[in-house]
Length: 235
Length: 318
Ligand SMILES: Nc1ncnc2c1ncn2[C@@H]1O[C@H](COP(=O)(O)OP(=O)(O)OP(=O)(O)O)[C@@H](O)[C@H]1O
Ligand SMILES: [Mg+2]
Image (cartoon, rainbow over all chains, first blue to last red; front, side):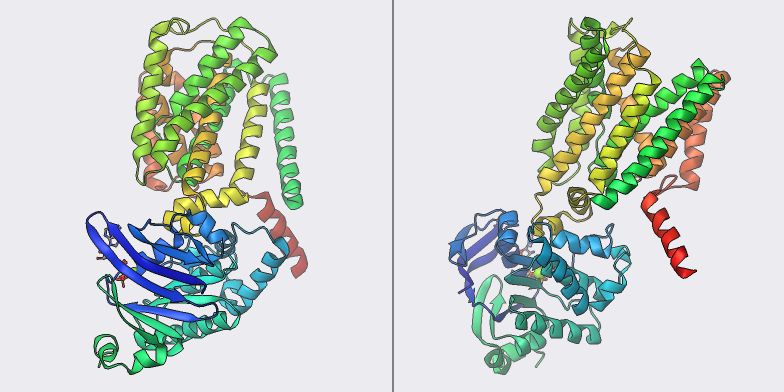
């Protein structure tokens, strides 16, 4: 098991955002967490990345506990996050944004090759290399955010609603890219509101509702589940 | 790195040419004592404002106490050179001032920069005020009267060299990997943190660096003007440095240079207007901000690198 979240609870002051959540991600899988607005999905990702501290519970990554580690250490150990709403660096160029993704890396040769890989995967980023990242369209910014996360050469990539606010053609492209990332050997933890698409590409999925996991299963099984269909697939 | 060396050498060459030019102009009498003083004050303002621009423009933290760090440098240099009126004393004074400023910046920076929000502005304003009040009350600093009759050890050449050194250091820092980290923290703290950047560390680093360069500016001020008093380093001084940064363009070192020069020359020209001087000066500030609300240069930078690349491209096209 690459990632194992055990009985995780996270509070914001008195607000209980995550209430005893457990799930796991095996190496090589795409696992998706779906749930309505405010279910606690982003909170879980931030806690895994070390940006917020949990109230209780454990996060095991590659056999070690990481819930008390600093985010620098967590990124260095191979977990990279694409935050919700992209969070690219607007005053920096596209290339500088990617360089920030590789900030902690020491293997220069491999890093150089990885820039090429990212540019091949996202040709638009190569074209806009020296442009201020703020001038990219929403879809292009999402690609930049993903490229930037990949520049950290993660073992596990955390994607927070990558399809949010994108036109259908871009959404399809993003989901194709997520599958390509998996084929390349990176494990994916995917958060989505677009449950149909996420479950279609996921090996397994968990349904989160007001801070608790209420259902889990393979992507296929969840797609076929009546409750899931009613609540998240619009019928 | 090697490529940057080339651009640094070009800059150094420009600096040497500038130095020779000023020397020649002084030799033939175009630059008189009055003009030289203006040049020195411009140089000191460039050092002060580029440090503040690093803090405000590049790391995105608001500091209102730059004059406090300047005071530390000024008094350190004044006291050391009084006891030791030699070039070595000047160097020692500058270094001690920088260390003092660095330590004070750390003490203010570490607790306040961990918080998100503009706590630094208030903390720095308070700290500068505390420094000023301590200087008024200490015996060794001669209280509110300050120190005068200091040996004049800084010449315009000293100031010129230190402007070049601090600018080269600052600009290279901005273009380094760590400089990019500082800017990423300014743009998006959450994202920077999730890239594995220790955001507090970089905010503190920029703040300490800026504080230390302010001490250099203060030391030069003391050892050129030869008179200092605590009230030279009040909030108005912090604000005048801030004005240079804002006027040039927050986040543009080119702008800081241009604004320091423009305001310095303006101040010199207006000397003959007597009481009208401050009115005209303020009017000029308002006009610049009306017509260039983002400062003279916005975030634009003059770059030798770009100039080179343009030439190269032009050649390839032929
Ligand atoms: N910084 C914060 N301070 C206080 N409460 C917060 C904070 N961030 C999130 N919350 C609350 O925690 C709960 C979970 O939020 P979270 O952002 O994890 O939801 P989400 O599942 O990602 O929702 P969405 O799909 O809308 O992004 C919500 O009730 C939210 O209001
Ligand atoms: Mg969310």
